[in-house]
Length: 252
Image 1 (cartoon, rainbow, N blue to C red):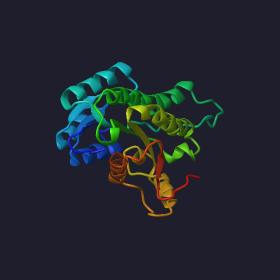
Image 2: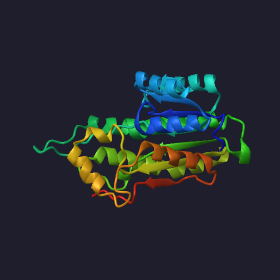
Image 3: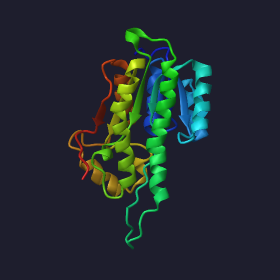
């Protein structure tokens, strides 16, 4: 997959990992559609990289379809799609008083993290399948974002961990199904990364998690996540795999 000159769509690109990916792909020569439900954030990033800002909610089927159509009209069919949109609220299954987590609290996390990722994947796949093949018969690549919590979810992460495990579980069957179109699918499961989501938690909790990273003993940077995306995009043999990007951390 040659990044230069190709059209790319990145969701959750108004901040954090998505923003870093959008910036990296633009620096590599891609024409990037910056999708985020925060219109101002999308505009900020798009203005910096010469991209197209599109305000979209990944849980909105019609809105996302319209967003893809806007990006296609401006840049041509997407060859690269990176799904970074996600939320990570923490809530226990039972409160201290023994009250169960509201079902809608669980469903809302799955709606964004899992259904939103699938919504992005299905629209990207439909667009890529209609495009002319590139070198080696490839038509496009979709990179999704999971989390090491999908393997080792902590207390309070039942919804988040379940959603990210679902994203990982989607990777192989999607790659097998879309192989006949020349579309690759891969997933990154980051560990402790310095994103706005991570910085919403208490400093002492952040330190305890970061201290558990064997090496390098620090949080990852969004730029390092973007480097992994660039590797996946550029290596045609990468397909159907979830990559842990975590400094060997195992959440306790």
